Length: 316
Image (cartoon, rainbow, N blue to C red; front, top):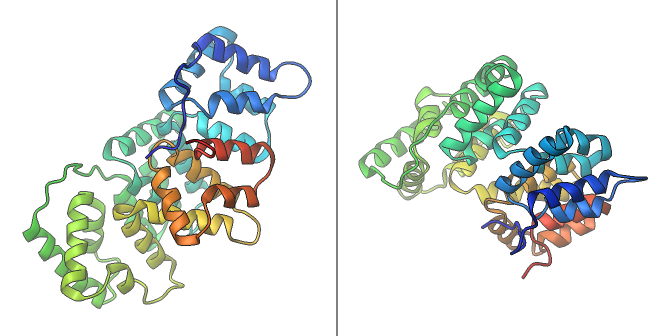
């Protein structure tokens, strides 16, 4: 499901580092050389490149990139070069610092990562910011949003496929009762979404639809302008159909007046090694246009080139 392409014969670490050093040398930076290396190495390889670069040249590769690059191209390269857990910590920290009620990045990280990935992101957050993610989420969010986000970011869900159908039926009933009463911040409703395994939630929501006739997100659309309800719907989508959630983020990022490069960069760098193939299929199905063509139409230069490389443009 990854769209990352790594060459069959990967050059040695010292060769990659030497080439990157060369890309920074002289007048102007060789962006094409940077793309040809970093956009075609997986997370483990990129981590080793960073280590080797620091050992060889006595400088953090990220600092070297930061000095040489600028704007959207710089951001995509830096985010991509970070270890996935560090990247999540960085994005989560940014989201707490610029938190608004329409910002869904914290929920996105909490609900689309595996339990171990979320735990690693929280550990990386500790290491980098000398405080906990929970602390910052609690400090920067308020009211209903805090009530939902705090249990989501602290969750450690069971990852297996086992499902308790009796529980699914009883919890579908609880969800329906709460939603019928518009008790959208009820503790039980939040508990079910924040703690149950994804397989269990899927079974519960399938039962909800069969028993009560509507998809749960349809019942949560009573007020389309309510940002808490929008976050609740996005939570459900991230837990059971992440590719649909990410397709929508990309569609809104590309199809609005002026591209939302922040969202575009975030989705491409965080999903390229995970499920970008499925997201691309969903995008084409929903928009009748391939994602790479939409990116070409909306972006330019080296920024466009690295995005296309990461989503596997031109690969068989």
